[in-house]
Every structure is written in C-alpha cells, then in structure tokens.
Image (cartoon, rainbow, N blue to C red; front, side, top):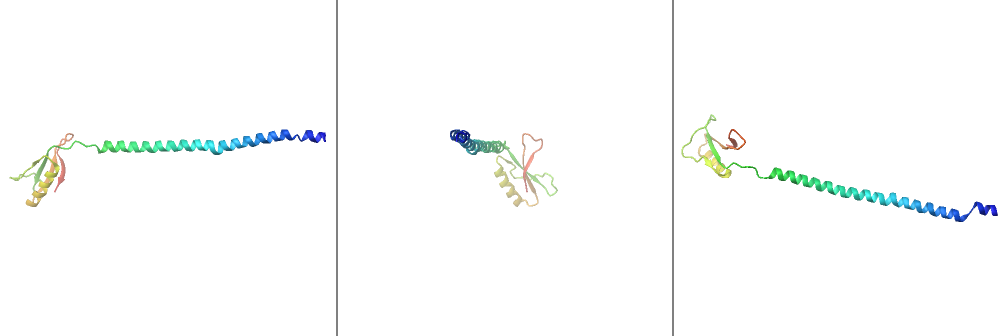
Length: 136
C-alpha cells in the first residue's frame, strides 16, 4: 500500500486540478466576457463618433451651400419682337428692384402685348453679359 499511496497522492492532484480549473475559468472569463466587452464598447463609441462626424460634415457642407448668395440689386425687363430682336415699347416700366415685382409686370406685359416676348435680366458681378432669369 505504500507504493500505491506514493503513486496516488491526492493532495498533489487536488491542487493541480484546482489550479487547472481556476486557470481555465480565468481564460474563459477573459476571452468570453472581458476582451469581447472591451472590443464591443470600443466599436460602439467609434461608431457613435463616425456617425456624429458624418452628421457634422453634412451639416457644414449644407451650411456652405445654403448660405445666401449675392443677389442682383436691379432687374430689367427687355421686350423682344417676334423675330427675337430687342424692341422698345413706349410707356412700360423696365427697371425693377425686386425679382417678384419684375416677374409680375412681365406677366401683365405678356397679356397686354401678346406678339412680344419678354426677358427678365440682370447684371451679375462675375458675368460680362446680362443673365436671363425668366423668359416668356
């Protein structure tokens, strides 16, 4: 029995089994909860920053494109005859300060003078020629 007791020392095996079980438990918690939790948290925060950055870039580009541009200060209504050449009609107003008033007068002139066409133009700062806004 002495040889069997030396071969099977239950204290050594017990401590070895406890060490293996605790180490495997530690490894299972490390790779099953801790590392995935850190990675998932990182990607959640990184995803939030990516979405926030995308929203800010979109808002900034929209703000740059939506800002008011330099609008013309004067508008002219140019009457054109049936051949498309500039003509003069006595007694009509051709200089306007706002786009809406000029457009309203153009519609009235078209009803009054059906054989003429009218162009709403303005001189812009970056252009050599007058820019046509409306044509009826």
